[in-house]
Amino acid sequence: MYDYDRTDQSGNKRELHIKKAIEVTAVPHINVELELKYEVKPGAKLTTFVEAEYFSVYKWDIIGKSTFVQDKPFMLFSILRGEGNFEVGNESYTIGKGDHFILPSNIGEFILEGTMEIIVSHP
Image (cartoon, rainbow, N blue to C red; front, side):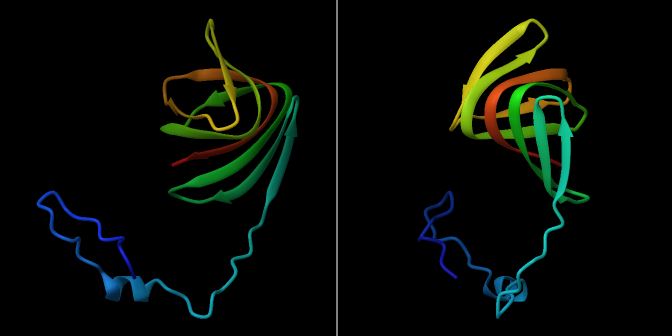
């Protein structure tokens, strides 16, 4: 285990938690089988990678115009490919590859339009 010589606020090297790291390490590596789920809606194909109690991860392929509802505590978006528009209320924002943003819980309905591959996650 290596911490890249990072230091704390006082300039001391941070403590390494070797025993805890070993407890969560699987040797040999065990591949986890993902049960991908797919949903198709107008203008989008949604792939569920992980849907768990504390964290969920999806890939959204936007191909046109699609409406969504933000009903989570917050949502994280990372645009992997393509470009398009994010619309909420009377506002429209251009988004594209390399952009990352957070949607707070009070957004409600929003629209994604364009040709984009997006990773979306939320608690």
